[in-house]
Image (cartoon, rainbow over all chains, first blue to last red; front, side):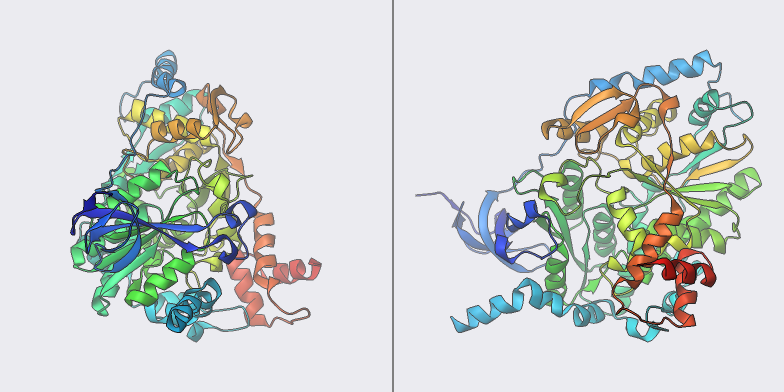
Length: 107
Length: 476
């Protein structure tokens, strides 16, 4: 049996809002072939397991329903490694300024 | 069962879109129909004036939450770099308006402040906005301060679940300010979901395109014109505005006019994303830019009323003197230069106009002044490293070379030398013709437009009634 996530836990839910056949007429083909999906976060209003249909209370106080995907969902965006194509630009432009004798001397 | 069925029908795409008019009227509290003066024409100035806000009151509302009054910084080393590449006597002084100093880190606080102030004054229980950008964080920040609930609807991930890193950061920021964030997959039905949110909650529609939003930016243009005059004794010769939906350009230009800077050249700058479709699931994560690009700026310039309100208050063709594009690689390059030479690490949007200004400054004389009118905060996700690592992951090639070889969605070319940065002119005459074609597209064949409509179209395109009639007559 899947582990129950306690009521009051901050979770993310997922729901399909429009199935492929229900999408707006003007969308291009690659979007028309996939559903319009929603992800939202809030506090579980009752215990539920991952993959269960459940209700959350959002930060705005709304009750939304969907499939629980993650408990305490992390933020995973960052910077990543340096990009070699950018790493030398600083030295390059400083050299141009030095060679032009143009490092700023104030107004 | 029957009830379930009727709920579903009520929530279907066409049903919700059919209630758009009533939802809009209730959520923004403006009767746009009152301003119609012809078949196409409406009284733009009266729409703005009837809000009752003038520049001094807007400044006061914004000052109350620490919005505005941002520094104007002369980027002397970047000017020196531009002069080292320019012909003798050329190379205007470049200034940057450091809008990152606003409470949520961008000029969008100016747009959000009047909307939230108005929502509070009129007793709405909360505010909602459809935006994947800094504007969401701005509305959430202002709502937090005002004690209002807030919902932000974002287009955030593709059908594979890949989130665009910059939008992921906006999600985090909105949540930090206490907003509910509805994240959606790719498609224009974001607007349909937004209408459902407005209907469900009775919140105020803090649209980017309402009069409040555009009036809120007037302080930016007003401030920068006075700051340039104070620092240099002359009004700015040119102001470069990163251009997407048109509000930034419209509000900035209007604000400069209120400060008396009526001769300043207003230049729009966008990242060239030609070839990528804005509603395409496959293209969504191959753009490397979330705003300030031609995917928004061309459609919104040639048809402003495609926005989420019946009549957009952002009407950029009325104020635009010139429109240029830069490449993705040029913007990443200048972002590095800004950090390396000026000690300013700033987010992507303003750097589009900085790349353009760097090239345009080389056309101007040394005693002239060119202003980049915004910066924004940088950080995880909204940074060249995050975008280029993500682009590589999505199969986009990255290399150094001639930026002319840049192909949006396929190849990002970082210049090898600053002399390769160019501002490429968009043909404004074609843009104006395209506007006129769009404006008249829905009219029944043979409709005879009256003088009010022709004068309106002339004002919209900054041309003359005679010119408008000629162009319309030439149309098939």
